[in-house]
Amino acid sequence: MFEKRFFNLFKSISKFILPYFYKMMLKLKLSRRVINYLENESYFSNKYQDFTNIITDMLQQKKIVALDVGAQGGFNSDNFFPAKYNNFFRYILVEPIDGDSNKVKRDEIIITKGLWSKEEKKDLYIIERRPGSSSMFKPVEKKFDIHNIKLKDYKNFEITNTLEVDCNTINNLLKKEDQKYLDYLKIDTQGAELNILKGLGAYRPLIIKIEAHIYSMYEGVPSWDKLLNYLYDLNYIAIDWKGIGGHNTRIPAEIDMIFIPNFDTKEGEELIKLNKEKFMSLLLIFGQINILKVIMKRINLHNKEIDKIQDFYFN
View 1 (cartoon, helix red, strand yellow):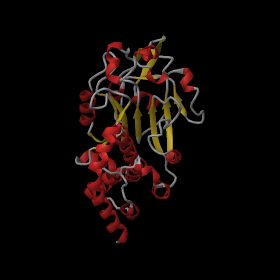
View 2: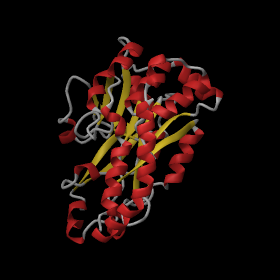
View 3: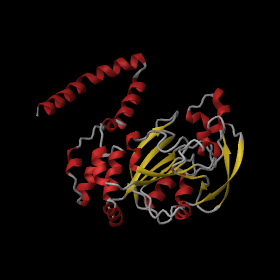
View 4: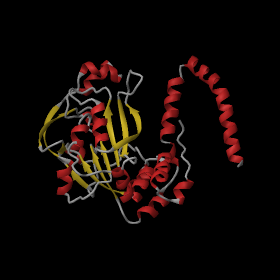
């Protein structure tokens, strides 16, 4: 009770002093840096909590099956969720560039083909100075200014090689691996996300993390509304996004987005209920506490330990 009263008092005082603090930041030209820092800290605020015991109790010996498309540096290499949860996953890594695929652990499944909407050969444009920017689409120099790329750094985005890649669909490649289901799908492929999703087949992950280009620096990348509409047509809804990279607009040029099954539909509710332990575990791992509690109440899932958890994220 004392802690709650103290917290409410602190919020009231903060509302009073923040306007003065903001004016001081403006004079020192620190406001955007401070805001960006606070936004980032808020976004990842639940990383300081440890849900390992709760997840272990729910999953028992089961593993969450993950497909990481664009696995440069290995699974969860961007540390989008805390590495302490990596052991709960059995992951399949997709990386068609030989040099990059050699960097990942050899005790996991590695697919060295490309992914696309159908089985065919595609050109992959290699950018050696920035391997993570290599793409099935060519970068366009006239679009670099939106991404806040300095003129002196343009050379870092030059195509240094073109590699012909054998591509196949998620559906075909997972069937070849005799993988009957998929729990978590991450796609970070510099514009090829929509084409890859079109090869998903009947697989329906519980969480999809995807990079969307609002203003792409690559030629011919489908607009991001087509990507969103396709996922909504697959019965997914967005629950989160985070701007990535530099940009000169008031919205990010690129964003990481999180999608889950639409729990307001019969199909989405059934998918969640059939995989409730994995679904709840994934939302804990991603720090999505409040929406998890809403969904649990909405579709009548119960877990007393999750009910006790406080979401540290603040708007």
